[in-house]
Each structure stands twice: as C-alpha cells, then as structure tokens.
View 1: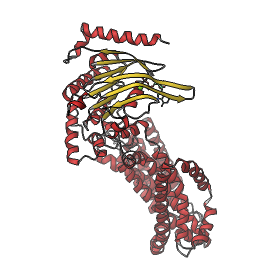
View 2: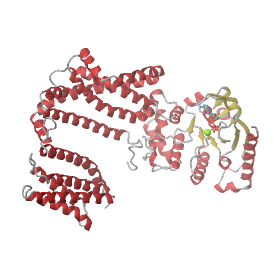
View 3: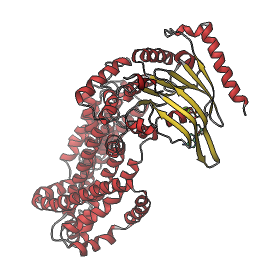
View 4: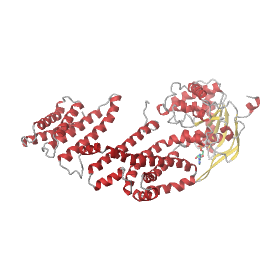
Length: 366
Length: 264
Ligand SMILES: Nc1ncnc2c1ncn2[C@@H]1O[C@H](COP(=O)(O)OP(=O)(O)O)[C@@H](O)[C@H]1O
Ligand SMILES: [Mg+2]
C-alpha cells in the first residue's frame, strides 16, 4: 500500500468518523442505518492501520454500501451527517480504484475489463453525486435537474428524441460529414499534385475555417432552405478544411528514403500513393476524422438555431429552453453526448485497427 | 546470357561530374570520375564523409542526375536500367515500411513489378532463408533488432534477383559483432549468387575484407584517387584480417586516403 493510498484511506475514515459524530449529536434525526453505515466506513478506514483485509473489494463494498444507503434516503431534508458520509463513500471508491490500478501482473483479460470498468465507474459516480447533491441541496430544477428526472423525461420522449436524432445526427451531421471529409480527401490528393493549388488553397482554407458558424449558418439556410440540407452544408464547410489540411500534411509526411526506395522499383504514381503515401498519411487522416466527428455534431446542432423545420436536436433545445423544460433540454444533450462519444469511440477503434503500426499504437506482440 | 552482353561492364563512368547548387555556392560532389566495374566484381567505395560516395551510388541508381560526363549501367542509361529493375539498392537505414510484415516488405518490389502471388511467396521464402531470417517473416519491422531489420532490407534488395546490388553503408549503424557476422554472410551470398556489388563504407577493414576492388575517394571536389585490386583468396574466413597480405592492402588503402587528404 502506497503512502498516497494510506492518505486516502485515512481521510475516508475521518470523514466517516465525522458523519458518526454528527449523527450522534443530531440525536435520532439521522437514524440507525446512517449511524451503522458511518461506523462501518470509519472501521474500514481504520483497518488499514492494522493491515486487515487490504483487498480493494472491501473498500469497494464499503463505498457501494454507503452509496446505496444515501440513495435510499434521498430527499430534500437529508440529515447533516449524510454529507460527510458522501465524502467518505467517494474517498473509498477512489481508494478501491487506486488499489486495483496499482496492482501489477493483472491477468490480461482482467486488465482489459478494468480499462473499461474504471471510466464507467467514474461516470456512475459523477451521476450519483449529481443526484444526491441536486436533491439533497434542493437545487431548483431549472438550474440543474437531477439525473433521475432527466432519465424519466428521456424514457417518456423516446419517439421525439429518435426523430430529432435522425434529423440532426443522421441526416444533417452524418451526410455533411461524409460529404465534407470525402470531398476534402479527394481535393487533397488533387492539390498534392499541383503545388500552385497548395499555395493558393491552403491559406484560403485557414480563412474559411476561421469563419464563425453563426455567420455561415443563416447564409446556408438562405441557400439551401430550412430542412437538413442547409445544416449538412454547414457541416461540410466546417469539416472540409480540417480534413484537407491534415490529408495534405499526411501525404507530405513520407521520408525521402522511402520515396527513393519506391523510385528504385520504378513504381508508378498510383503505386507510390497506395503503397507508401496513403498509409503514411493514415494517422493524420484519422486525426481529422476524429476532430470532424465532434465538429459535425456541433455544427448541425447550432445551425438549427437559425431556422429549421420543427424537428431536430438544436430546434428542440432552443424551444424547450424557452419553455423552461430544462429536463427535455438535458435529455437532448444526453442524445448528443451519446452520439458524439459513440462516433468518436468507433473512429478510435477503427484507427487502432488501421494504424496499429504507428509508434503510439504499437504492441510488441500483436 | 550471350558472350557479348557479358563483356559489357556493369558500370562505366566517364569523366562523371555532379555539382549541387547550395546557398554557399556550388558543391562539387563528383568531379571527373572515371570508373569501370566489371560484372561479378565486389567493389568497395571508401573515403571520408562528404567525398561523394553516396552521390555516386545515387547517380548509378538514377536517383541523382549528373551535371557532366557520361555513365552507363549494363550498357544502358541509369534511367533505363532503373526502369528495367537492373539493381537492388540497400540504403543506410533499413527503410522498412512499418505497416507491412517482414514478408510483405520483402515482397514490396515484387508486388510493384507485377510478379504473380505464388512466385512472390516463393521468392520471399528463398531470400528470407538466404539472409537467415526464416521464421521472422510474419513479424513487423519494429519487432526486430536493428541487425535483423538491415538483413531484411538486404533480402528485399535481393528478392527480385537484380544482377547489381548497390549498398550504401548498410552496416554503418550496427555494432562490431553484428557487423562482422553480416560481412561474412554478405561474402557468402556474393559467392553463391555471383552478383555485382557496389558497397560504400568508411571502414578500411570492411572494405579490404569484402572486396575484389577498392575505390578510394577524397572530398572537395569528390573524386577517385586510387583503385586497388585485392588478390586475397576467394575463401575468406574472418581471421584473414590478421594475415600479412590483408594488412598490406589495408596499408595501401590508408595511404591512398591520406594522399587524398593532403590535397587541401
Ligand atoms: N541534395 C544535396 N544538395 C546539396 N549538397 C549535397 C546534396 N547531397 C549531397 N550534397 C553534398 O555533396 C557532398 C557529397 O555528399 P555524399 O555523397 O553524401 O558524401 P558521402 O556519402 O561520401 O559522405 C557533400 O559535401 C554533401 O554536403
Ligand atoms: Mg553517405
């Protein structure tokens, strides 16, 4: 056990002890379950000084137990002792993760499960703390609704959300993304052959990517109408130049020696392109694809603020904010966040498959 | 092969000049180089760095264009020879493509030259054995040591069976022990295949050990100062390097290098 882990354990134990003391002073208000939970967590913290059951799962169980208790007693009038207990739960959860991550020689399967479990656990903790804090502190829902309320709204409005998702993510963002990235890729290959275009087009590209979306979007609405086509056009403009610049840079990233090598084989332009230059450019291209997946979503949503039929993530967000239906706004944000992380994750996965050879992805035993 | 084509030299340079334009004025990388290399020769180029060894090899390979004089490779222009796949070139670094396995790296020239898949597999297997890398074909370059990578790059140059092998300090970055070993293997390979080899080095023992002829060069301007024929026996164990004859030849090379230096 490292000094750092011991510090977390001590702090966790102290927080639980504080909860215990406050629960006693509050006489009865806290209830027996809260008293017991505080006692258990305080003991869990102390056990480290006697080297008893040092396993991470003990800390995890203690933490989850405390969390379950807090959830079960969640209302606007929580006893004061709940707050130090919440901190204690958080510290023990952290400690469990710390211990597991620090353990060496984990079996391969377990370590890959863990690499997924840790972020999930972390995310779950944020949602938990959010729930406890918003309800326990009676934060007005207009400011920040608790996750449970958002979840209920989400479940009740799946058909609306689905329609919005299709309109904004599939029709506007995805088609714009494919069109923007695809055409930028082709243009990059073309201008790579014509140095004049490179010198002329790339500065223009930088200029266009500096244009604010709030300026482009209304113009695109005038050009392409209210429906998703104008949003796709905004996305095309936003994604085109990142892809162009990255692909051009990637195509130039080959080393002179590698080019000479292929020259000694009398390789044609297309052989050089396919066997050397595109593979070298792949990490650059994936970089652009990932950046653009986020840009496309932002572009499609924000563009809907400037005129749209009565469907779409951006439309819904702007109208529901006006009606103070903040839970619906949050449900739409959840949809956008899911779509964004999913596409980013898929792209990262694909990137690791394609550019496995790149120093940043190498495994010594593939 | 007919008697006639055998009598054509592998390389013939005639008052070959190459001047680079740089910011500090022209650099005479090669000046009036006269040289004839017969088929089957093992020729080393030796000289201090900057004397134009790499440039000369690159001119032969049509990677650089001479600014004066004439050069022919197998009786053709360098460009014709390059397009005909007349030579294999081994660079100073392995230059293996990281996304291809060793096998597919070695198969790269065959792929580009449009050789059938079956033939490719057969040749890759043969050259892998030739350089002692059988069993490593499925590895990626970054999973092998520097010495193995360099051997893979030699295998790649051998894979399409060119008559001429151009090697630019192929073992320069390797340690002494690996280098000795690869020198021995290279010599074996040369005897087995009867190829013409042009080998750039700046190590005197390496040049004497490997070559039938040693071309001594000197810088500013880059030129040939001496050509030394070696009469060491074809059979050369590593300890031939302690023999009297070997040391005599090495001394001649050293003197040649020193004379080149006294020029400036
Ligand atoms: N592309 C180039 N542009 C300008 N000068 C060059 C270029 N390549 C080589 N040189 C110069 O030509 C000379 C010979 O270089 P090189 O053939 O690489 O020498 P060596 O291989 O013998 O060390 C050096 O002075 C070098 O600086
Ligand atoms: Mg050199």
